[in-house]
Every structure is written in structure tokens, then in C-alpha cells.
Length: 182
Image (cartoon, rainbow, N blue to C red; front, top):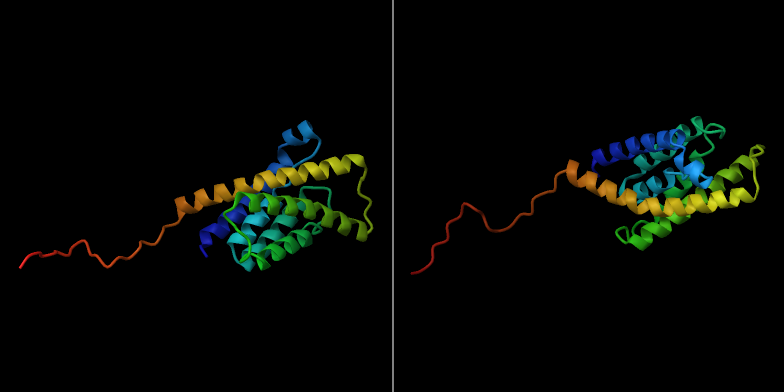
């Protein structure tokens, strides 16, 4: 596990939360803001260790809640549950397949707001719910599904650019002279 990858994921989480809070173009255009944390959770679940997942869920949830109307800490548990569920089955998931990335992004982006809503209702909050909430949930799910392969592609580019690849060893040495003949 490369520590640069973990640092990049946490930095991307911070930037993603900031962009969600400051950029309102998507919210004004479609009526819903696409959540960027579930696609990052999917990527991190398939690429990093449990420490990075826990940091991502805790810090991402706290940063998100501090810039939203949610009570502080309510987004941490859904993100952590999604991360642990995907990480537990990561040996069976075809990480490189676009279809698998889309389905995981769709399911994570659909489950995260649903679990957050359940937590909000269980602590006695009264969130605004209506038919527009269904539209926002569908849009958030589809947006997360489309952003998940983008996360995989961007982080693969960053990993290739910032980390070295071990050189494959061969039995042939470049300084060896081959004598042929008798």
C-alpha cells in the first residue's frame, strides 16, 4: 500500500466536500447536489487499507456535516458501513470493470443518503421530505454512479505519475557478453 495514495484520497475528500459546499451550479441546474463522497468511498474500499477507510469516513463525514445542515457526525456511520461492506468483498469484485464500478457507485450513492435519512429520523430530526426528495435521491444515485469510474481513472493517473513501478528482473544482464562459436 502506497502512502501517497492514502494522502491523495484524503486530500481529494477535503476538496470534494469543499466543492460540494461552494459550487452550486449542479444544484441550480438539476435541483439536487451530487454527493462526491460515495464514489471516493468505493474507490478507497477497493484500493486502500482499513485505516485509510476509517479516516476517509470519519473526516469526510465530519467535513460534510460541518458544511451542511446535518447534525455533526451523522454522515460518518453510513459512509463507514458502505466502506466496510465493499472492503469485505473486495476480493470478489472486479475492480477494473466499468460495469462493476458503475453498479458499486450507484448502490453506494443510493445507500448513503438513505442511511443518513434513517439516522436523522432516529435521532428526532425532521428533515424536509416530499416528492422532490425522490428526484434528488435518484439524481444523486445516478451522479454517483457516473462519477465512480471518473474517480478510478483519475486516481490511476495520479498513482502512475507519483509512484514508481518496480523494474521487472530478468535473467539477462545488459553488461553480459555472449560468446558464440567454438
